[in-house]
Image 1 (cartoon, rainbow, N blue to C red):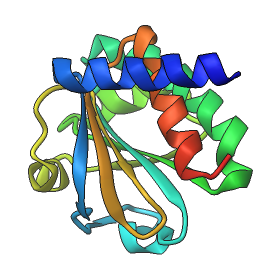
Image 2: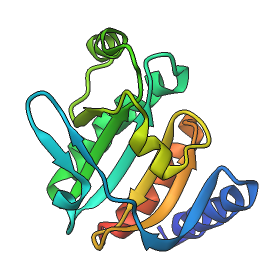
Image 3: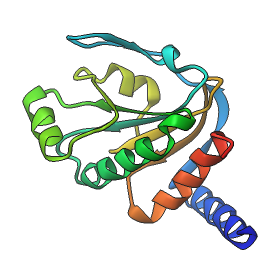
Length: 163
């Protein structure tokens, strides 16, 4: 177990150097409210929980791989305080809904067709994800989704969940 922890930390350091994962300087995550037809969602409502915030679109092929992984994250860690929140950026809501029919989400999905929230987070690619700690601090950003990164992302999430 100790060996695996050291290897995981070494791999995180390599990815940080390569720019695939960046450690944020623990600044406050930009707050936002998204009004949905059925409800309003505000990032502040998740204070006290760890938030994995993911921006996606129907045309994004890595998103097809990330959705099953995020479903698994949600299933494993929701009871420990993890919230997976996916923000769709499609202007065509039908395209987003077709994607969700094919790749169902067991986590929270909201829609930002004007990209106002994405703009606040300064997306560099698709998908882009942001890890926010229990105090609302942005502690990590990640661009793209590669299955090789999944263990490292999960290790970072587990460390924030104190697991």
